[in-house]
Figure (cartoon, rainbow, N blue to C red):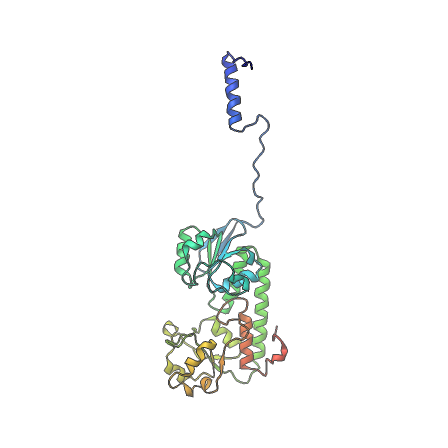
Length: 320
């Protein structure tokens, strides 16, 4: 084959060199086609101020979410964002799908490395429960929001905050409003009771942990028509066995597995709740001590336990 003549002019050699460079770079002499970019989402980016006072800017609706508390996991599913949950904790057991998600550790001892491996664009935490981990996540520049459900109103505020962070505001407003309506209905019916049984919630027996009077548990005991025997703050929320005997609760709220040990406490045979075997634990599986969507179910069941004449089982799920 005959080799084509090489250009012998400076201009010719420059033209060949330019053509080779353009070919090697994949260039074209035609019009440049702009690289497509993602269309902006209406309402985003948005700033989220959480219950710790920290502002987090989310550029778009998060697609990979990690939950660090069972209540937050339930909220995400209730808002229709459960399909975006890529990891949660070992304690996240509701709905059943939550159990199948990869776990990043326990509620108060999450694993930062596992969270990072999940590649989240949002982590949803509880301020007092995940305090150290929240600091580490923010130091690692992982978008993290924290809610702090101390009182009943804070539960609704937390639902709305998570709704805003996930772009599910309408669903959050509907969920919170529906829960508030049911709580108001339970309170109205329970207010008709001629008496309010003295009530104590217990989480363990050595020591006896309970809830403080500025908690949503205290609120819900009142909503259900009970009188919380813890009326002033206690050091570390520990109540002594002698004080329990002195305050003589009519009802003790605790896990079923804890009941035998409480019945065996010295001197507690005279406590009305022990004497009359008036221990309450939810049968529906909805925990009273989990500030999520099902806490109203637990409050309603407590109201039925305290005032069965006002909340008959025949009424189905009760007041709504």
